[in-house]
Image 1 (cartoon, rainbow, N blue to C red):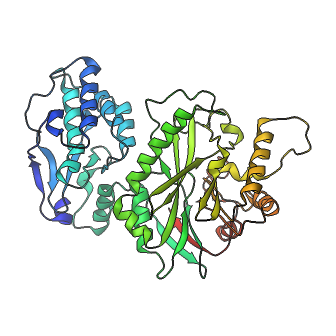
Image 2 (cartoon, helix red, strand yellow; image 1 turned 90 degrees about the vertical axis):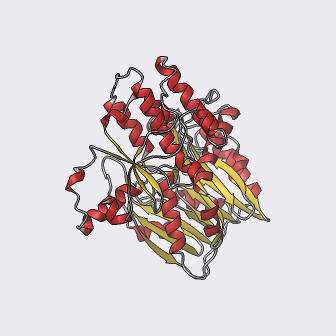
Image 3 (tube, rainbow, N blue to C red; image 1 turned 120 degrees about the vertical axis):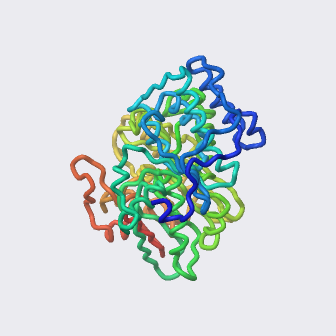
Length: 461
C-alpha cells in the first residue's frame, strides 16, 4: 500500500541519530526530552536502559514526502509509554492521535520484562522516533495500531482501499464538506460546524487550510469567528492552586491561558497565518481544557482568544457565566473588562458560550441577592458604558432558534450601539433525548444568530 501511494519505501531504515538526551542539546525540545528520559528512569529505578549509541531501525521510511511510519503492536502500549506521551509538548506535531495512544496504554497495559528494563527502553526509542521529524526536517511520524484493522485485507489495487489507507495515514479523525454562503459586502465570517467536533489541533489546521483554499474570491472580512471549544488543549499537570472556581486564583488562570496560547500558536503557524491574512484581519479561537474527561463538575476552563493577525496582538477572555451543571467546575473569567476590546476605535464585545445570557434580567423582581444577579448587573452596567458596536459570541452548540433568541433580543434593547453581531457554534445536539438531531432547521438557526452581512462557512462532518 505504501509503495502504491508513494513509490519508494525503505523498510527497517536506519537514522544516524543518538539515543541520549545530550545528543539533542541543540534541539528546541532538548529540555522536554531530558524531562521524559528522567521520568522513565525514575519510574521503576532502571537508570541504564539505553544500551545502544544510535537509534534502532524504524519500521518504514517514506523518502517522498519524508516521514517515518511505525506499526505498533500491543507491546508498545505500556505504563512507560503512557508516561512519555503525557509529557509531550502540546505543539509537537504528530501523525497519530496521542490521546488514543494514551488510552490504549491504559487499556492494554502490556509488560515486557526481558530484559527487566525493556518497557522503559522501548518507550524511550518510540519517543525519539516521534521527536526526530522536528530535528531532521521531516513530516510528523505516523503510527498505526496493529489491531485497528485486518491490514492484510487491504488491496493496493482497489481504489476504495487506497482511500481508506490514505485517511488512516493522515490521522484525520473527521471528514467534512464545506459550503460557503456569502452576503454582499460581508463584514464578518463565521464557521458553523454541522456535527460533532473534538478540537484536535491537527484536524483544526487541516480545516482552516481547506477553508482558505475555498474562500470566495475578492471577499475580505474584518473578523473570522469560531465556536466554543474549536480547540482543545491538555489540562496542565502542574497548575497553581485554583482556589474557588467562582473567584479563581489569578496565577492559575494565567497559567491556563499560557497553555492555551501554546496550543493556538501551534495551530496558527506562519504558513497558515499568511494565508488567513489575505482574507481577514482578526480571528477568534475558542479553546477549552478539562481536568476530568469532560465532567463539568470538575475544574475546566472555556477561553476565547482574539488575535490581530497583522500585528500579532492577542486578547484573552473566557466564559464568565456558567450553566447550572458547571457552576462548581468552571474556572470563571472574573475580569469583566476582558470582554471588551478597542480595535482602532471600534469597541467589540467578546462572549463565551453562555455569557450572552448575562444580558437577560432573569429573576429581576426577586429580592434575593445572588452572585448571578450581581454579575449580570455589573456586566450590563459595563456594557452600557463601553458602547460596543460589534458582538462576537462563541457557543459550543446551537441547534435551536430558541436558545439565544431572548438574549439577542435583550441585547438589542440594552445596547442600541450594537450594529453587527454573530454566533458561531456547532449545529449539533448531544443530549440523550435528541442525540444527533437538531431541533431547528439550519437556515433558521443561521438567520436568528446574526445581524449584518456575513460569510457563513458551513462545515458538515
